[in-house]
Image (cartoon, rainbow over all chains, first blue to last red; front, side):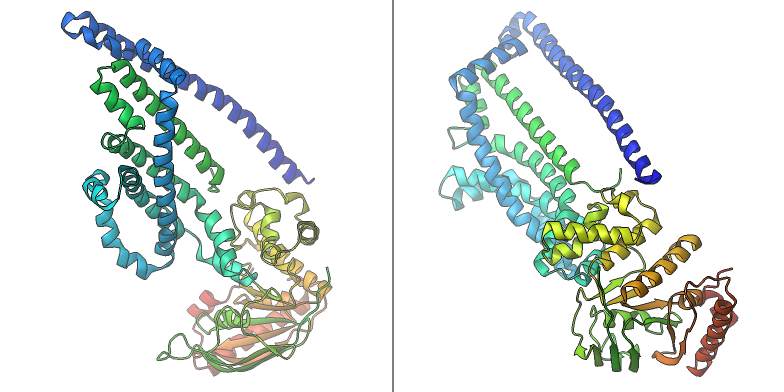
Length: 274
Length: 271
């Protein structure tokens, strides 16, 4: 191995050691931040519940919430809500990806289509996803497909625009080189376009997931009898505030984990030099 | 790696960007022997890069024919590969993946592909860099990867569009020497488009001078010099002076007289 190549390997090892140190510090901050949040939560509820007129707020505290979370897990309520919401979220996101990525590719490749579609897409993007709810309920036979539609329409825009932006950044010479080396049209897509824009597509999916997660819970407040939104609404109506808070914590944890997954995918597909 | 060259026959070639526009060039005639290295030199705008793209099959001519070994060229092929001014490597791939991308397009088995890639990397002296990210390489090393990516296809013809103009003088000199030596060893043809007179003298067997608008081939000069060639050789310097004179004379003949300013702008003269 030449000196330059050996130096490259040695530099990679040093970078690995540095990364390990940074990971340990990140975990420290993560745990510390959560401890601060729970302490603050406990303190606010403790102080509030000391006032006799606010004593009913005691069940909003972290201890009843965590106990309720364990109870809901044991009885299977939490899993049932997660499966129902996860299905709607997954289906909505899949539809958004299936529509958003191809249209984004065409927008990125064709200036004419990009300019023609700009005004309708910008207009559509600015319509609040929840304002589609009455139309969705009329158009679809049940609440289930209506909720999936609401998630899809909320998630499609960031995926579409991020894909188009990714493609616009692609060096046109990459296509010329590939054609010169004998690439077939489908190989242009699988070997050049998709790896080149994967970073932007996943970034769009991450943004879409955030929007879809926000839309999911209020969309489940009405019409359905399962899911995270329904469970929260049910807990509020039956005055089981510890269940309500437990579900809020679950929503926060799941959303955070999904976002971490997206971040890991972004890192995996990022080829931009750090 | 065994490569053979190709005999090239171009007749009555013409090109215009739009049906109403002026032709970029018209009625061009150019021939090359198997294994011959041809340099096309000329001022910016005379159509030399367009001609190279058409020979590579990346653009279609508006008139005329191009034949390799008597067969008409009607599109790009891995038998004639082009190297561009910038390496245009795929940054999400490692060095070896970039070199083997053409073989991947041709759906080569992994084992055969790995062997061929390793051989191409040895030719360009980058065998220790197979698993390195191309973004960690210098400009010269990246251009060597682009050269290996072309060589791995075992082309009969390598077309070079001012491939070393963005590199420093030392890297440029070493790549000019290496490309010519590899081409001669493996026997494939070279067509180099350049406005660097030195590059033409160091790399070509024959220099073709284009000038005018629409562009035309004004003169062709045999560069009969022994290898290896260096800038310091008296014969190289004499050929360079001759090409320079012919280059200026061509501009006069084509009706676009060379001003001193244009000479400075268009002809790279290495000290």
